[in-house]
Image 1 (tube, rainbow, N blue to C red):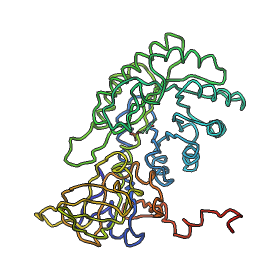
Image 2: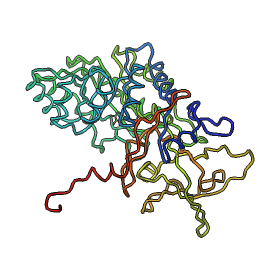
Image 3: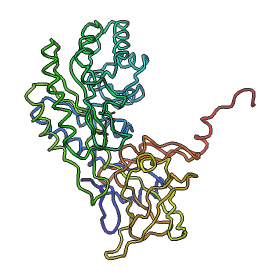
Length: 422
Ligand SMILES: *Cc1c(COP(=O)(O)O)cnc(C)c1O
C-alpha cells in the first residue's frame, strides 16, 4: 500500500499534486511519501511485536538525511554498509547503539570510525575481517560486539545480482564452518560474540527460502550455545520483496514474515533484528519524468523521457520492471497504446520498458515510475553530465526539497585542473 493516488484526475503524493512539485523543482525528480515510509516501518515493528526486536532500516536502499530522520524518529535503527553510511546515520540522529555495520569489505578506517562513534554490532563476514576488528578494538581499548554472518546455502530464487545466500556468493562464512569460526572469534580478546547474522538476498517473493535459512540459524544457535557461546541476538537480514507490477502476485506481507520468524526462532529467547530496505522505501517513492518526444520508428513508437538510466538504473542493471503511469489520470475506457519507453542517454541499455502498454501520453506530459523509492536515487549518477536529480519529501499537504538539483556550474566546478594545464 502507498499514498500515491489520483485525486480529481491528478496523481498526488499524499495531498500534494505531483504537477505542483514538477512546477517547483522541474523534472525529473524523486518524491517520497512520509506516510508510506512510516507505515512500512510500523508493519515490520508490529509483525515482530511480542519479541524483543529492533527494525534496522537498510539505508543503502535510500539514504537521504530526511528519510533517515523520518524513520529514526519513529524508532528505527540503521543497517549501514560503509563509513559514509555510518556517518549519515549519525548525522540523522541515530545513536550508535542502534547502528549495525554490515558489508563484506569493511576497512580499518571504517571500523575505527564505528568503534569510536559507538556501534550496536559488526556483522562479520570473514576471518580476516574478524582479525582486523579485533586489532582495531584492542588498539582503542574497547571490546567490539559482533555477530558472524553465516551463509546458509539456500537458493533465494531472486535475480542473480541480488542473491547472496548460496555458497558460491561472496557473502558470509559457510554455515558448515560456523562452529570453527565462532571458536576462533571467542579466543580474540577484542571481540564479544553476541549472535548470528544471515541475509540471503533481496526482492524475495516467497517465505520458503527465509524459513529454510532461519531453521538453519535455529539449529546453529543451539549448537553454538552448546559450545559455550552466548548467542542472544539474531540478525535476520532484509530481503522481503515488493510488488513492482500491480497485476502480479503479491509477495508475502510483513505480518506473515513476522509469524514465520516467531514460529522458527521465537522459542530461542533471542533478541531479533531485521534489516529491511526495499520494503520500507520501495513503494514510498516515485520518479517523475516528462515526455520530451514521441518518435515513431518502424513498427514501434518510442516515448523519449527526460529521465534516464543514470537517474534510475534498475531496469538497465537488473532488468527490473517499474509501472509507469501518467500523472494526469487517463479518461476511463481510453484504449492503451504500446510504447518503448527510453531515456536520452547514448546507450541502448537506457530503456525503461519495451512494448509497454499504457494509456496514451503526449510530449509535455508527466509520467511517474512507481516503486522507485529504493535503490533509485542512491544508485543515480551524473553519466552523460546529467546533474543528479532532486529529491522531494511530502508530508500531508506539505512538501520540501530534501536534495536540490545541482546547477551545471556546481557539477562542473567539482573537477579541478592540475597546475600543468593552467
Ligand atoms: C541489501 C541488504 C539488506 C536490505 O535488503 P532489502 O532487499 O532492501 O530489504 C539488508 N541486509 C544486508 C546485509 C544487505 O546487504
